[in-house]
Length: 166
Image (cartoon, rainbow, N blue to C red; front, side):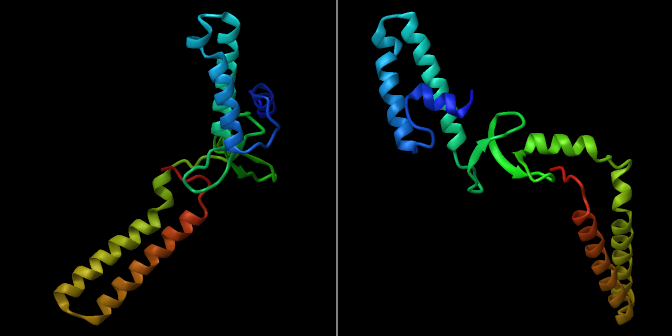
């Protein structure tokens, strides 16, 4: 259901505040509630439409955890948090990731991307063990260099990733 239709059903102007939306819903819900109308099918239908409109507007105006305002996605029409797409438009995460998944190739082997980081980390562990055995400062320096190379390789892979799955 579109937001304009929801505002029309509740009998308020588009862009009304949360308090105005709540007052309009409460007024109409009390007037057409099934307990008050004694099973009138018309009032029951109006009550269902008013409740659906209020729920849609309430979800659309809700603020999510990161403080971003939710709005209606122009692709799928669902109320959701919107993100800027590559074409400059705004759409929800489902539409955005669905488009990116279709247009970007998926890597064949995910473990190959981090092979350098794995090799650097194993080398750092080997040189750390050699430092413990021989107490040579050159082994400690090599272990530090390999640990730093591991961080650089992982940072590169995170920055160049197309999609990061959680």
